[in-house]
Image 1 (cartoon, one colour):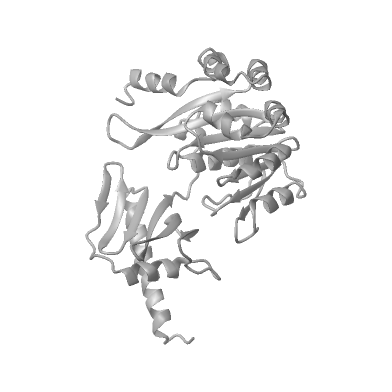
Image 2 (cartoon, one colour):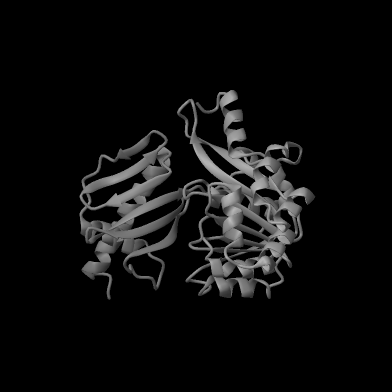
Amino acid sequence: MGNGDPVRGALEMRRVELAQILEEAVARGASDVHLSAGRPATWRLPTGLVVSEGPPLSAAEVEEMLTASLPAGRQLMPPHGDWSVGLPGVGRFRIHAFRQRGSWAAAIRVIPDRIPRREELGLPPVTEEWIAQRRGLVVIAGDRGSGRTTTLACLVDSINRSQPRHVVVIEDPIEYLHRHQRGLVNQRELGTDVASVQQALQGALRADVDVLALGLPLEPEDLSLVLRASEHCLVLTIASGRSVTEVVGWLLGSAGEWRRRMLARSLVGIIVQALVPRADGRGRVLASEVLVVTEVVRKILEEGRDHQLVPAMEAGGRWGMRTMQMHLEELRQQGVIQ
């Protein structure tokens, strides 16, 4: 098609319009942008959703904006799709497009250009000890929107800045961009650079990898490969789960005693995150539950006494452990949350 083609012209115009919406979202400090037919672009600010002053978007405009932002070779395919885009000097954005009432809509997450440091996020100091390990499994858990991906990026960035190690990051889609520093970081996007999680895991172990970071939800059939990988390198992965015991149950699944022995041998630590509104109304603060695998915890896992994990966390402050309730109470006493 030539430059005068009306379809190409419409897409170019929508690409510019979408860029303007995203640029204004960043300027306003929005964490997310919502596009939906019949409503102007909507931003999520710390105070809640705010509708922009622009005109309502038509279904065709939303679809054209999303099509214009797609990576080369990709198409909008029902029922949903995920990809990321970057705007130089503005930031990166993760787009989740989905069908609703016969038209396309999207939730777009704003990803800052700069990866935050551990102290800025409020991550516990013990996470620095975790990423110094040569092998083992570190799990970052929580609900969607709890900052798991940002925590993973922070830990990878810390390794990259301080350690001469080869890190392979597998994501769907790629969000934060890592530039080679003291370490070497290769990022692989599912569906673009590699066809499946299993293929990515198998390939990583042939790539002289020191650290494998998995920034995507894992299926139960992936866990055996992940545990095997953790015997050869350090594996950092995100997971769903609102408590350490829930995450341990997910890791074990319905597999036999071999999985339990493998997990007890490989697990380094689990952090379960939640983002809680600050008392002053200025955004949210990280609250977390932390399990550190000491010899006592390892024995608990080996012997299937998972009900003793909570008491172990309650008594394990000297090793950096805590329950979610303990941390929430600490934040209340400090006046950080209500």
